[in-house]
Length: 75
Image (cartoon, rainbow, N blue to C red):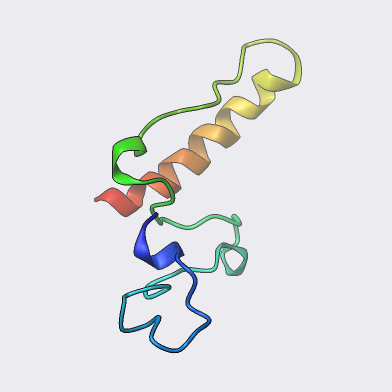
C-alpha cells in the first residue's frame, strides 16, 4: 500500500511517512484526485471496462475521465 494511504492516526505515523501527501478526494469538484491508489505492480490495470450496451455505454466517458485524473499522479 502506498505510504500516503496508510493510517496516520497514531504517534510516529508521520515519521514513517504514513498519510503524508494524502489528498482528500471529496474536496475536489470531481470527487477524485490525481493520487496513486494501487501498489506499483498494479498501476494502470483496469478492472472494469464498460460495454457498449445500455447504461454502461453512458459510463464510458466518465470512467475514462476518472482514470485520466487518477493516472496524472504518475507523471
